Length: 282
Length: 305
Image (cartoon, rainbow over all chains, first blue to last red; front, side, top):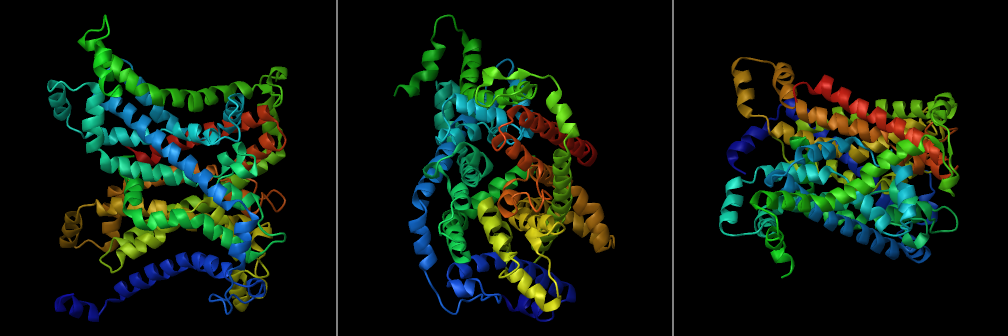
């Protein structure tokens, strides 16, 4: 910090003070729900039901975490969620990057129509489709299987759109040069396009992973047995204690939120990029 | 090894000249996505329209009876459906302007010359990575009339704080507030990027011309951020029209169906009452409304884009 800027900040303008108070005040309010979750999960029954909020519990207990881990198949839900989000992400990155490569760098009749149909389908909400989709999944015998979630979520067009935006910026001369060097189309895709698109792939992977991990309604419909649930479905449909306990609810909530939250704190630049990409290209 | 040569093998197939090989590769590369897209997005869209014309038998589809527009007639005459439309409209009105406005205010604030930008961005964006179940469970407890912190503090300044999720008047605003906390970060980061993309030269020029802060906001910031604002508004409209998880978990549509939104009603009709034909009709209604809203939004707000 140079002395220059220090002297500048010793007499803050009222406007600056207002800005700081507003933003940090808002930030404080944003943190309150987290504080409530953490502190309640550590409270004994008496303090959790107490009318007065104890933000720092006078007495700390881990009983709810113990009860929740014993009372519900949380580990199984975690694995299910990981499998579904992971598989969807891998499929989306592969098939979306392939078609985006084809739409931007290869010339074939009808590709404009295909692109238009895909972009128009942006507006088809998966929820409006849920009844017919349910019958299709059921006809395939996929109910209760992770594929019941993975396949429909692999069809969502946003990744195609984002990848085409990025592939457009890839100079055609690079592709032409590779062709002259005798590269096949597949080699161009694998050895040139994909390595050059690493940042876009990282951003889209993370976005798809988070998006799929957090899905609630569709998994709720197609995953019907307790052992096939994902975390978001499991934590609201199964009560881990015999009677309602605020502490147990917040413990299970915290366990469900923690994995992705930690990933977010580490990789937030990529996730923010992925979200911002949508806004600037859209 | 095998995959490495796919392209050249294909182009060596008999009867394929140089021009056709690009077409062939183009179609091959598009095919995997198009298959998934066709089976799990386009086909259901068409099947939904078909199903909505039947008294669909969920357990034995071949026993379904063709009823033409009966499901749509029933929908128009169904008071519970209209209550769901009203509940959805209320939720949209409560959330969309606030989500866009607050997102814009936070973005403009954080884009100023202040300390702790990164911290602020992390805090405002963080709830967006939570799943709706986590958000709903936390807020449902905070709203609890007996032991929740919100009514404890309200009780210090007023004698009869509302029963929030059990209240006819306040249940929907309560769900809306939780939603705003959850998703405003999405708009915030997009608008922040848009604001940072506005050239500072424009503001310098305005300062030299003696333009007020308000004039600079109205004549530079808003027009320059227009496409980003249209984008977040459209995304929020679509998301809010389809609200489900929050109401399902926090209120289960209650009290007395006041928070039963369209997707929630659709879920009930389909998976509690097993009336697939009627549910498909409601789904189609929702689809048409969403398309109309997006188009209108782009036409009137989006302008030239």
